Amino acid sequence: MLSKRKLKAIFVAAIAMTLLVGFSQVQPSGWLEDYHRLEHIGGVPLEQVWVNPEFDIRAYQTLYIAPVQVDQRALRNRGDSTREMAQRLVEAFRKSLNRTLQEAEIFRVVSTDPYFSTTKHGTLTLQMRVTQFSPGCPPVRALIGFGAGATKVQVEGKLIDNATGEVMAEFADLRMHPGGALIWGVKTAMDSEYLIGVDLKQLIDGIAKLFVFLREEGPIGNRY
Image (cartoon, rainbow, N blue to C red; front, side):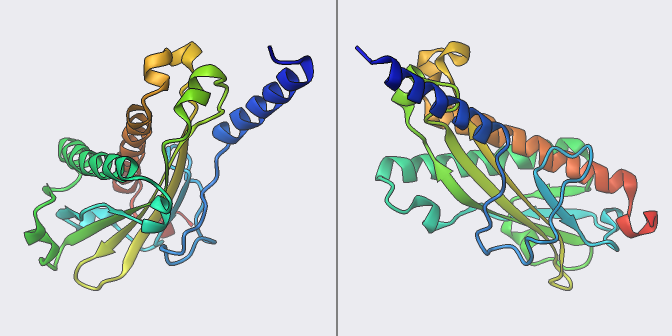
């Protein structure tokens, strides 16, 4: 049986992890061009975003979504099962994002077909990379909860003009899912792939709302 001191230590650690999950911050990987210019855009549920002030998304008709890369540093010291999980998740993430952006009708064409990576005028390419990935600790989530043993996934993205190669926007978002058994149930708390999938779905919503914001607001530079 745990002593009162040990129980207190576990409780304090749990509270600390809850705060960490609630206020996660992007951990720069070096992949984006400039992390210092990233900031939050009101109404867009992505942690950090930068948009070229002159960028007008309405001038583009086609969006190509490139295969999502997984930074091997994010999988360092991870087993085969975690690597396979990451691959399944990024493939599902790309397909779901493609479908969501098609339904949003921001562009005439949204595709994962490599053909559109070669088209120039009026085409954007969305490149994304997973730079943090952890299944956390399922038993700890199930037994302690409150953020202890949380999963982690960080996605960084670049929006590139195919004709010029210029980066028109960048974003980064780190998600940590507490998956506590009291809320999600023991079975779900133990399922790291499901919990990370939930966070990736929220990221899809954030990316779609960023594009909607850019369509409705026009070039950010015009507002100043």
